[in-house]
Structures are given as structure tokens and as C-alpha cells.
Image 1 (cartoon, rainbow, N blue to C red):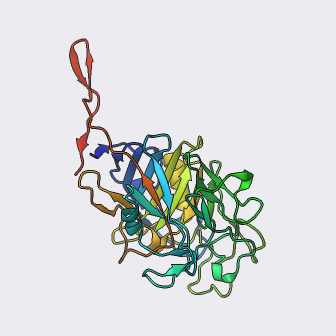
Image 2 (cartoon, rainbow, N blue to C red):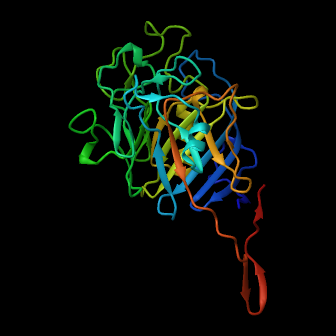
Image 3 (cartoon, rainbow, N blue to C red):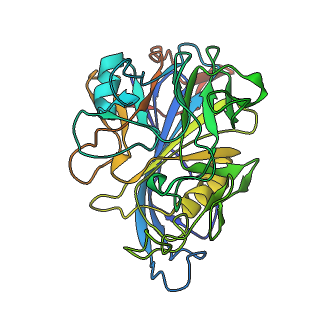
Length: 349
């Protein structure tokens, strides 16, 4: 059973302009907000970038980490085979693991849209096995330092669902503070840190963490692009936490017919303003953006977001397990012998 609610938007801001957002509660502890946004030209774009008004269809999954039945698994490594993982679509991983939801995760060496052995960028672990390490500074050109940052923090989900965003520990294969890796993913960088937007610094030569070069720096001059975080509108995937670390958030924005996408900077602003996200990692986006779910009524899996073309075979994904919603008894409060309707909920099919 899936509950469908019409909801008021969470924050009253002059921009972006929201359509008619809805929220569904497909599983216990899981709520999914969906909306279509009309966005103005990005205010922080590099002069001459030419970005104008655009649209974005967005989805925000909120997960109560204390809800019964909530669990996670990251795509495992491929053992003795070449590379670190075998690529597959996020939807295929969801079905393989018999999970309820799944989302794409790390950036990876994208060569062809088929099942191939690949290497990931940044830290990754599955059920306690670390199979991809942090990337030390300075990043090699092959790792696209106009977008990816050295030692980009990882989001680690412990076996007890304790979630933290951490950098490297004593080695590139460990986490800071002696935290044991369990299910961990990382992206290009942490773009919200302790409630503040934290885009990486634009430098001439990358020498340490949290730094990028302009895409105009050779050999990244075509197409010309200044700051990858402010000057590119595209599909997006991100994962983050509430201030109390009790709620996990997964975000996607579409770049498909009817939706242009967002800049990373716009995404961070939107999630802080509307959801109060306190810490956020930007994951692989563009053609990799995939948010899949098993319909709780039909038990058929499909994508929540829209993709432009075929689903991409990605390097790894995060699966989410959740329990069904118990059948509701009644949303009626008996008061002085009079039934007072206090909620309006209908089944979504």
C-alpha cells in the first residue's frame, strides 16, 4: 500500500517557482517528494556562461533511519576480475538485491553503456568490504579535476544504520575517527557542510582537497566551461543528512524531455531552503542519475525519475530496504461522540 498526500511546499521562497508538489509514503519510514520547478538563470554562474531560465523535475526521498525494516547495501566488488565492480543499471541492482529502492552512487570510468569491469572514483565499501579508496591529491587529469576533488568525503552507513560523512583516516582505505567502513559511497565533493553551501575552490592547479580547476584549463577546454559546479545545468544525484543524523535524504533532478536539470549550486540552495539538509554529497549525475523503486501495490520495479535515452550501466548503486506500511485503521478522531476527520489519504496505484 502506498499513501499519496497533497502537501504544501516546505519553504516560502520567491524562487524557484514550484508547481503542485506531492508526497508519497510507499514504505514505512520512507517519504518521496516530487515537484516540477521553474528556475531563473543561475545567479552565481560565471560571466559569459549564458545559462538562462530553466526547469527541473525533482524527487527527494527522506528516510527515517530509526524506522523498523530500514536497511542498506552498496553494490559489491567484482572479486578477482579486473577493475573494482561490474557495471549494471540501478534498476537491475534493485531487482537483484530484492530491495525496495535504489539510487546510483560513485563516479566511475565510463567506457560503454553495457556490463563491463570498471573502476570507481573515490571511496566505496559494501557490507564491510572496502573496494575503492579515497583519491589522493593532486588528482590526475584522467580523474577530471574540473569536477572531482581529491579525498572527497564518503557517506558511510554502519551496520546499525548510523550514518556519517567522513574523509580518509590513517590510510586511503580507512575512514576518519577510526569509524569502520560498512556501506559507503562518495561523489565529486561535499557541497553542504554543517548547514552551509561549500562548493570547492576554483584554482589554477589542484594541490589539495576541495579544489577544482576550470574546464577551460587544458586538456579540458572543449566545450568551454568555467566552474563545473555553477555553470552546468544537468541531471543530478545527491545524498545527505539532517542535522541530527537521523534522516537520510536522496535527491535527483531530471534532464529529460520537460526538464533541463539544475546546477550543483542550485541543488544545494534548494535542499537547504526546502528540506534543511545539513550535510550533502554530490554523487554521479548526468546520464547516470537513476532512482528506482518497487511499486508497493503492484510489486513491479521501475524508475521514479525520467532519463533521456537508455538507462546507464553505472559503477555502483545504493539499495534501500524498507518494510510495508501497515493497513490503516482509521483517520478519524472521536471527540465528544462526534467523528472529526483529521486526515485525508487515498491509495496510490
